[in-house]
Length: 226
Image (cartoon, rainbow, N blue to C red):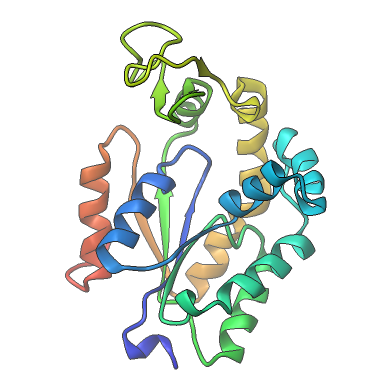
């Protein structure tokens, strides 16, 4: 099977805080695709206390990337699962040229290819505000931002009254390190995929998710290009 058979085999790229999670939710709902997020897979491993989780946690807490060999092994297994065989949305993988080449090989072995690489672009200072201002509820998991979407009462969840907290990797120093790591190791992917004619660019700075998704959907439905 190939990309020409109507599959949507997608990669979602963008710096931390660029809105990938929000756009991913909309894409998978509209197109009934599995959302394959390395972040979710790794956080699950951390929560369960597995050997992989312990290794990954050291890198994640420092804002660094988990080594390629660990990630590639995880993704090879995940893409072979039944729900990913007719299309997928990858979020957080690939992050390096080596990972991109490994993904190309995995898909080629199955007679498949990527359809689009969706790139969300947001100015760096807005990314810092989005991430360092983020707070989560310990009770229900609701998300807030002290700048863009604050709770009615500081530190308290509007929904359940639970305590709001800042994730360890959302403090400003770690956020800036994560963005530096992104620029150094992940942005080269844009050039790699541009050479293959796969990149579709969407500007997300100062815009609502509805506006961004309208442009994304125009590309995925074949109604337009960005």
